[in-house]
Length: 164
Image 1 (cartoon, helix red, strand yellow):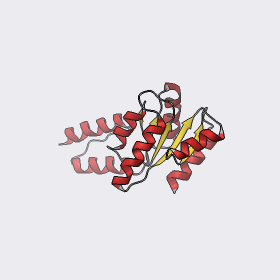
Image 2 (cartoon, rainbow, N blue to C red; image 1 turned 90 degrees about the horizontal axis):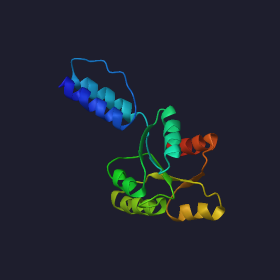
Image 3 (cartoon, rainbow, N blue to C red; image 1 turned 30 degrees about the vertical axis):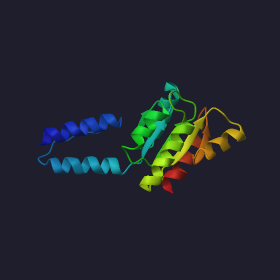
Image 4 (cartoon, one colour; image 1 turned 135 degrees about the horizontal axis):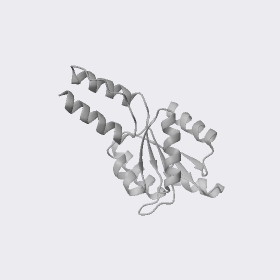
């Protein structure tokens, strides 16, 4: 049982791209409780970004705050993974292959109508015009951040939504 718990723990930690010191004990129940507390005490954030540099930057910034991060590279995958997890927030690039951020946001908002939950979606875009911001809000996004990421603005918005 301890081996199964350890295996599960390692898989979950790799999935969440986090590290944790493992101390074997006699009860796998204790292992699961420790893992559960670790995962539950930190917000889970989905980063949807097709540019590897931007993806790595956003992920590292979030992880440095102790937040759990999952990432995908297009809107179609975002919609799929959204249905499998309860995210506290989603950072959504707007221009991506397969399905863009506008389409993905609309689909997520449609799903939310059937589930009753509402997840904060913040656009990540290189477009900085007022009309671009309005387009993001019309698609159902809650807020808007421009790239390149300005760290103070990034954390200010994230904390605002995660604490409310």
